[in-house]
Image (cartoon, rainbow, N blue to C red; front, side, top):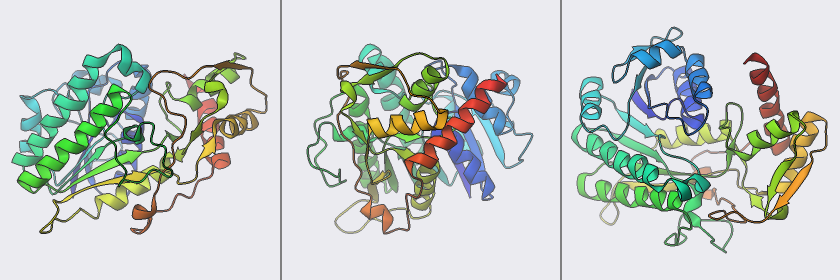
Length: 341
């Protein structure tokens, strides 16, 4: 099976590529390596996959091979590129597409709305069109727990109404789900939306809370605790998230007389924790107590997330990593990574 993973230099995309390659799949990774956060981290992730910085900078819109695994190719390209993206699909003949490329971040969407429309709407339409015209057997794509907005009912279920997003980022993810349903209905493309819940772990993005906290604590600075710490999150470790994606990848949705070959699935921990407990786990891993700066709620944020994962559990999914172990793994990686750069 040949799989395209977009966002391959990103946090989840990088881990998915590693896992798929370890299982013997042929994988093509795509990423535009934008500067939303420090590009050095993206290049370092690619280097772990056997793609040097020189390769990824020189081979624009052309695939280049990994020095570690001859079943991995990488191409640097924007999803918005309507000329070259269809050429990549035509030449590569993918079986499955995992679209994890997107402009991430709730707060950033308030200041940079155009970026989200370009990447998350225009780019996703281009992916759908390529899947339509190139016989893709299954499209999986990143959605987000942010689509639930300020949903008061917990845990959040995929049957809940999600018509009231409170950030443009969330609105683009809900739009992706609607667009995918349309293409499943009209063209019979099996599509799976992946509603991720607060993913963390080694190689995570530097704008994520755990990375920001680790960076501040390691440098003796205070950490910013929003909503005075009155937040609950369904913190989900990266290995569990990847396991969930791979389970869904192997079980495409099927159409029947009443529904299209379409689904959305929560992938999370299913056991939310307070932000305070999460911070304590980080402090324990560093062996210090953090200085804290308590701040009000930020626009676009929600106070609580909690995933109902009963549907994906029926397919064999288990969230097996507790916060203590997950945070410890992250801090170990963080110390090693930052010592090496």
